Amino acid sequence: MGPDGTARLRIGRAYLRDVQVRRITPEPDHAEVGPDGIDFVFRARSPRLRATVTFALQPERPGRIRGRVSLGDGTPLRFGHFVYP
Image (cartoon, rainbow, N blue to C red):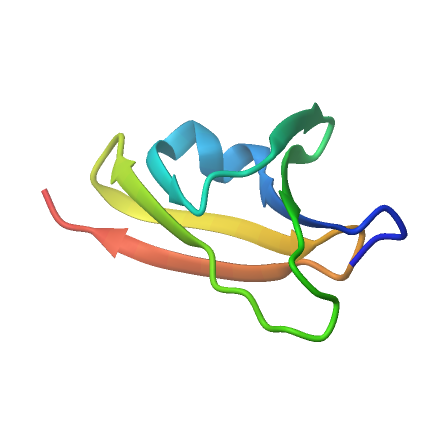
């Protein structure tokens, strides 16, 4: 969590080209576009509590889709999945 009481979840730009974000629960306070992707900024209830954020996504194409996600400026987690036609 940042000093301003917010948590940032960054999703890589390449991944966001291949999926459409349909819904985010809870809704972010705001989003910031950067060179590496979009930071979804959430107001944290408490620095000691865990939070769950759910993204409802719609793939834009079939095939292998790869992405990166990170908390703030932390080390990105790389992932991938396959979308059947």
